[in-house]
Length: 323
Length: 160
Image (cartoon, each protein chain N blue to C red):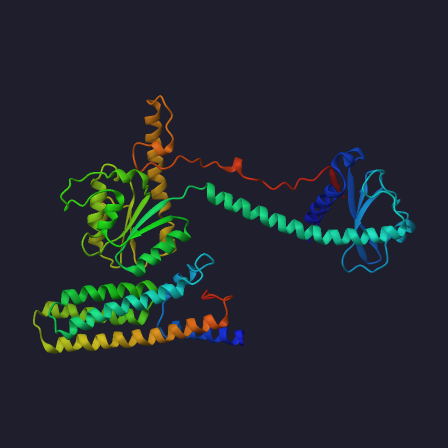
């Protein structure tokens, strides 16, 4: 263990057994090793030179070092009045040493457990407070759907998969122009927020390209970034898609490195939407909550600076001077 | 149960699959996607692959049996099959699929429905079926070994 972290540990231990006010009143503490034969013993002293506590390594021989302390005359073995370690007899000392040591290990254990718990708590909080983006994945191959779903979920996206362009349009709220009704936005559309569409190019029925066109033609959905996937590397196909407004073209098999390229497109669009939002809000007298946004694809207003809410583990000790 | 031995067997089976070209880089990608949240991902995907490819191959069989002259349709099926092979890294099968599609294309270009070309296609398809069944056998053994070796070790990549 590094010296620094040992000191942290000791100061934590000290805080546990010795109230801070008392410690401060007694001028704080210093600690450092004293040698007992070959085995160093960590001790805690008050600035007045009184022994408060000491820590014995596992490997230590059974003999109590107190005798030695007395005879070396380095330190006086007196205890701070009213400290938890008030004067004890030598026998009680030995016992206390044992219990100190026992509590030493269990304290370490509980420290480890607590910090582990805190860390996971922070992590889960961090994940919860990060905005979760929703991706609509369209592919007729059941295998590729499973893959893309896993790729996206691993990258912390919320995923909906559909097996055809028609179903994708339904999900987005655009009705197929082959149907009798005119192209319109369905009332359910507002509840479903899609931050990105990723679609296979070659599909029976409506191809990925057709889907792309329909999305870009829709006034409410044209801002949603669209990514095309294809197993075939055909330059003319790629350029056609990009011209129609696709944000990216992935060659199959899609990999994690490809998925990592999606975020900028989503964020770019959401920043644009937030700007629009701000401009809109200026002319509105009542403050609307994100749920009441007029346009369906506005990102939920979350701050990037969420640090203030997080628990920061406190390891700062009381007044401690390190020898 | 000698778990260490089973695991060793599984590892060597896996290595063999890569060395002999049955699997390629894409299979590593699948293994990378497997984690605590999705502990059986690779096996699930592979199972899905064999189910899906069996269906496609049955379609192709049917189409070939009927001596269908619609090679476009055959090409579509084969493209789907090849896509699936690419997605899981089934390298040898992918190669055979490409060869088959070449046959189909030749047929279309030729414009003639000569029996010899059809035979070529059928022979090519037989190769695909063979690769399919060998791969299935090997992967099934691999996953069985993994299951026997215990839940501790998942199909993760130790080192390339």
